[in-house]
Length: 380
Image (tube, rainbow, N blue to C red; front, top):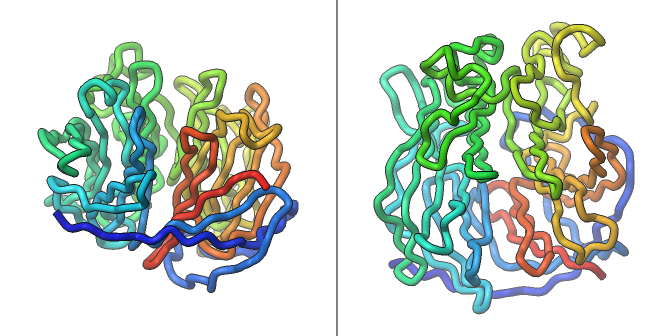
């Protein structure tokens, strides 16, 4: 077992709350890491807790003192929150990390406290191109080992190495998986494909009974919603509603409430434009597509979504927190029923890849790229 001793370094970072737009950057651009910003904010204090190599996702394990973090290159890291010690978990499958591939999301199963069940998503090689998959296994925290990992869901394979999405949500005895359009666009409107949709599965990975297209069989039986481009965030609000954040094309990023059987329009409707300058019709009344509850022009490139459920930050309960990659921002969005209002935005000085809420109500932020910092946000 490889042990990494990560010092806990406290640092006051200046993060000024504001509203308004951010600079436009290609949302799929992985380059151009900005130098970190140091300062203070009246809204929260920031503490650094070490660095990770292309960290992609993280989750606090229920009933434990551990934070589980995935790195895109294929490493699963276990951080002891009481000591700051980090170890690499054994038993992780090989991944195809070309482009936007690699090891992606991690989520604790509903029965984790009893049996250690966890879900992982990753990208693997396939004769028809790279393929996203979801696996279920058992995590032994004491041994830092993943065992009995079994692939339970397969994304339709496609050429290229972009727009996998593969974010996970365990909710009401179901597993939701976001499935990107793999830069193919048109499959997002084809219910015969599970690309460009959100799928709803049983805990074992089978199509959930009652799915909108269950009667069509095949990949259709997985689908819960369609018309998505690259949904890199999914979260549950305190009332049990589900929301998805999605990268638009050239601008037009979206935040959407997830509604059974809904079509969110891609690529036939969007608030953005194609990268070659080609026009895409805006959402309009009567077009049959669900318009975004909130959208961003210029783009911020939402790479993560957290809906705050605690009370440590006064007035934040039920707010969506969106982490921007190209925008290098953290955005707070107030949610009410199926409406969304952007109320605050902070310049984080780096690309924000993942967000998680700790059991004590603190908000943890994982920066993108090599040497991305793990940050803890607490009220001033």
